[in-house]
Length: 160
Image (cartoon, rainbow, N blue to C red; front, side, top):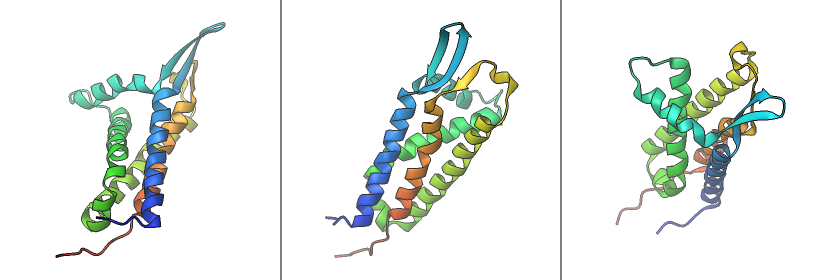
């Protein structure tokens, strides 16, 4: 039986915040395209998954600029969904903790960096597309996850 320290509770709160931001990404507009006067087409976050899976399955025509964020999104979802349940294991297994820290750090630098550079560059291919608030959520959900991993503290292994 594990007793929860305050750092474990803070880590759990950070992991839950990461999950909530990921949920907000799926339910918020990602792109808004103006189709004329008073007409617009909205792409929500959950609508990107067929493209993400298609990018990762098509190995012959792989484009690194597109496959990088797609792989990072899949990694981020996997980390966000499993992390609240592995806090006791992370606190006892330092190899797993370092793996989780490395994956979360790469996710922050990769996903946030790539998507941030796309957001701030002037891309003429975007046309009338405008980024929605879902873009902000997908860029920020890795940050509380990384904070949560950093709050998990090592426990001594007790053998009986």
